[in-house]
Each structure stands twice: as C-alpha cells, then as structure tokens.
View 1 (tube, rainbow, N blue to C red):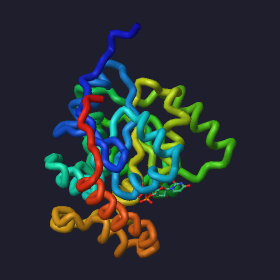
View 2: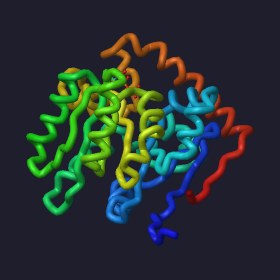
View 3: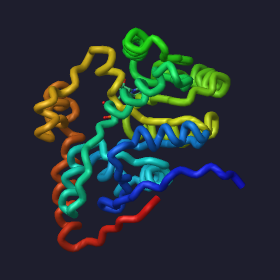
View 4: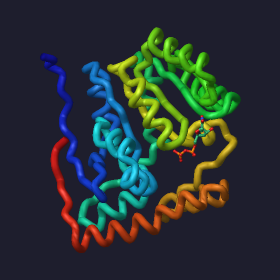
Length: 256
Ligand code: UDP
C-alpha cells in the first residue's frame, strides 16, 4: 500500500456536483507533485454543472476528479447562497500559476501544452518560454489531430513524462480526453484549460479586471465571441436551480 496521501480538501456540492474549497490550491497541488501523486483538475462553472446534470459520463468524470476548482462566478454566488465564502479561481489563473511554479529554478516540472489551433498553441507556449526562461516545455501539440497523430501524441506524452499537462480542447472534450489518458502519466497534474491558449497567444483578450470583479467575464466572452450566446443560456438556468436548491435542497460539506 502506498504511504502517499494528500490533505483532504473540503468539498461542497452544488446541484449534485462537487467543488473543493481552498484559498491555496497551488500549495495543495505542489504537495501532491512532490509526493508523486497525480491530479485530474476540473475547473467548474455553471455551464459544466448544467451539462453534467444530464450527461452521466461528464458527471462521473467530475465526481472522480481529484480537484474541482471554482472557475466561474456562478459557482461563487451559489456558494454564497449557502454562506460559504470562497474566492473565485479562474482556470486560466490556475494554469498561469502552475506555469510559474514549474518555471521556478528550484523546480523541475516538465510541461506539455496540448490543444487549440496549431499556431495558437505554438504562440502560447512561446509566450511562456520567453517569460519563464527556466520552464521546461517538453511538448507542444495542437488540438486537431487525426488518429495517427493522436497516437504519436500519446506516445510522446508517455516518453517525456511531463508533470503538468495543460489541455485546451474545450469542455467536455478535454475532460474526457484526460480521463482516457491519465494513466500515461499518473504522477502529473492534468488540467483542462479551455480557451486559455487563445488568450495567451494574444488572439483573444481576457476580460479586464474590473469586469471580472463585477462577475461579468462570461458576458465579455460572449461580446468577443457572439457564437457563445447559446452556451450562456445555462447561466440563468443554473441561477434558478441554485436558488431552489438553497430554499429546498440539501447541501453537504465534507472532506474529500
Ligand atoms: N479545440 C481544439 N480541438 C477541438 C475543438 C476545440 O483544440 O477539436 C480548442 C479550440 O481551438 C479552443 C479551445 O479548444 O482553443 C476551446 O476553447 P473554449 O473557450 O470554447 O473552451 P471552453 O469554454 O469550452 O472550456
């Protein structure tokens, strides 16, 4: 039996989906990296909660994930309804913090970038290579591979054994892909980072801080990418269900 254990984080359920509470996810992840314990991270938002409510495969992936972080402001508001104070931690910020951790001279955590359009992922990786000269990038691959290229990618991941694997395929594709391939690097942090490579490459803008502070980053993303409006329909649905759950539902706080 392994003697490797990591401190449990408190888990809260929102509409049946877990979220882990912490003010320092990075230290928790660093501890696991140092102990050689792999971590599948899901960055949770209202849209994922709604999708998981009618997608058993996604719900199962989320409930098996080692860490579910509060990515969306809807999650923070739902927690507040239950009196739980938890700062928001956007997936892109967690991705950046992990890269900075890996780029510290004292650390040797090889990083793999997978997903996004070909030039986008190259530019995103280049940005971080320039900003963090000690960052050890062992692989950069775009997210539109055919079957043969996909099996080469998996081989490359297995050979290079990155410790941080950033996967930008969009939800739920990235979550499913991580579930299917986690065994290749069981000691790594695997995290789906959605559209982060688009932002890091400079082709899309992150919402300015004042918009983020107003919990309106989702609206900024729709303004930038109007085709996302349909996805935003999950937000009012989530808000109504979260209020109903607060009034009539049960919620649980438990260590995970
Ligand atoms: N993407 C990809 N392969 C695909 C479909 C999408 O690499 O087959 C990438 C796409 O180029 C974009 C990211 O996945 O960079 C999806 O970003 P989005 O903001 O939609 O992420 P989400 O909000 O769904 O997490």
